[in-house]
Length: 93
Length: 395
Image (cartoon, rainbow over all chains, first blue to last red; front, top):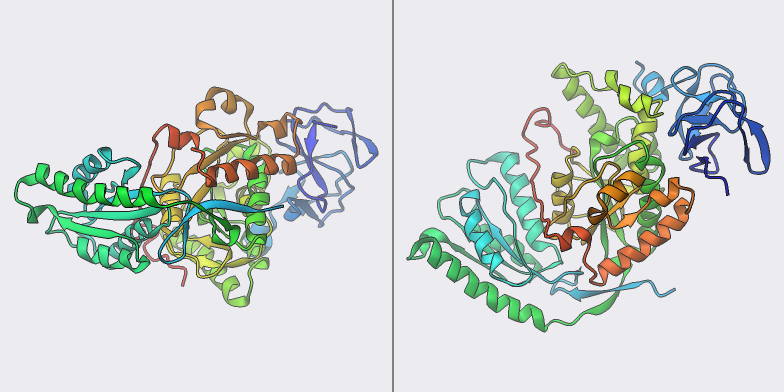
């Protein structure tokens, strides 16, 4: 069993690192092996699917934000490539 | 599987998992008298609080509802109310309202007793001893989970709680709801950013509107006071820890409520009207929150803590769950369930939820929690007239 990351819900398109993961490290999710494209510190997220710009990032099976650019499998996901759906669309800020 | 727990049936049909005598001062001025009565009785708790006089309007109502709720909680066999005599929160009116549960309730005012505080303590002890004797005669019986109200709490959170301990609590909460029971999620300030997701779980349009009004009302109050809450969320520390958006941060918190449909929003200390998952209006201080949960009738509280917290509650046992390995080690005596096995990769969230479920059943059946063993009985009543909450109401 891999202990490097956790996926909170089957609908999710991102995983959360349970330890620091190095760039180039190989992980597998659901039998698919892929490389991690940037360093992922503990508690940070990476993509477990390709995610197109404007699509939702899902964690806990829920929308946690919108992709501001195309995100590739294994990419680090954080404030540089996603924004809050809540602030942008719900509160229009 | 036989999903039942052992408890004490109360005269109104509610089920307690403890058999306490509550000594409730109607006003702060007699806290020490209540405390000294409780200290001399077995399995008695003094509900010490700093209020009971100089209060009016919604502030009075809120304190009154909370004290009535704490006395009415089924973990309490009987109640001795100690008044001073000149306060505006009257001991006999408090007694009258708790008596609606048909449990034994007695009240007296210290100013009516010749001999001062010593005589008042003796008087209270005499009543308390009588109740204790009756309470000890009661036998436990087996009850199903429709008789349970579970409180959900988190305090001293870190970046690990939201991906380990909180979702494990969510699984247990969903299971209580599936078995016909009730669960309550307080701390509305930690729903902000997820209300559009909570609204999707509301059982009807009316409940959805209340959730919306509660959160937008609070954000408007803050704006009126010149406070930019959302401009600083998530905090720089949150971002460093990996949280990217306000909704991700709050989702970690509301993960404790699982996936169950939301029946409605309760006022602070208001008992749920039906079974199922409820939200409760409360701003997020752990002790106020757990006091409100116990006053709403919760018999047991699950509390996740990442950085560690020792606190307990005088009425409802508090089961602590911690996802952080260092805290589990450093504060072992304050933690009931070691959830750090999730991030160590030893257990899945589902497996940890099963461990928590078994621990909760043992607690329901009488096993003491760490906070109970240590005698921690923290209590605080939220004063919802204080700014910026003064215009908050969920109706």
